[in-house]
Length: 115
Length: 112
Image 1 (spheres, chains in turn red, green):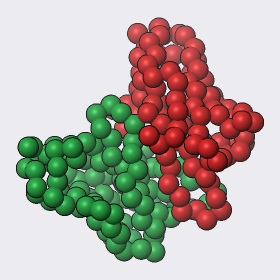
Image 2 (cartoon, rainbow over the protein chains, first blue to last red):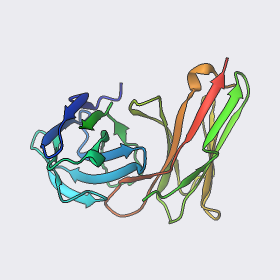
Image 3 (cartoon, chains in turn yellow, red):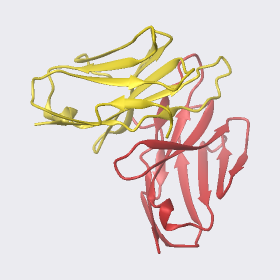
Image 4 (tube, each protein chain N blue to C red):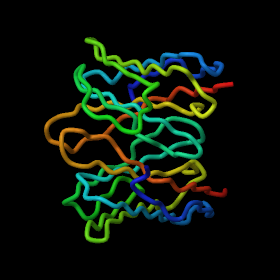
C-alpha cells in the first residue's frame, strides 16, 4: 500500500459526460501528479500540482482540468468524454523537496470506461 | 510521448533464472526509476538511481545506469513466479517540475 488513495476504482459512463476523479496523496507529500495509461499511448504524464499550484503540464487535453485543494487532495475533471478517453488514470504523490531526487508513489488508479 | 524504449517488449523465463530488462532514453535526466505493475493495477516503485550513480542494488534487484549511452538495465536475480508483471523505466528531468516520463515497458513472465 503506497499510502495514495484514489476514488472511485471503476467508472463507467457515456460519451459526452463529465466525471471527477479524486486523489489523496500520502501524508506529508505536497506534490500530486496525474497520469493516464492507455493501450495505444502507454503511460503519459498529464499534470502536476505542488502545494495547491499548477507546476507542470504534460499531454493534458483542454477538456481535462485538475486542481489541488488546501488539504492537498486533488481532483481530475474530465468533460465531453470520448471513447478514446477510456483508460487507467493514476495519481502519484511525492514530497517534492528541493533536492530533486525523489520517488513518486502511485495510487491504485481509476479505471474509466466510456461507452 | 514516450521518453524511453524498453527491450525486450516481452520476456519469458523459468523460475530461478535471472531476468534482464533494458531501457533507453533520449534526453538528459535527473534520475531514473524502475516501477513494477501487476496486471491492470497500480505501479509499485522498485528503485531510483541518480544520474551520478552507476549501479544500485536492492534485494534481488540490480540497476545500472550509463548516462553516456542514455541507457539503464534492471536485473532481477533468482526470479520467482510472483515477479510476473510489467516493468517500466521512468526518467525525471531537471528543474522544478518532476514529472516522470515512462518507457513502453517490458512484460515479464516467470514460469513455475
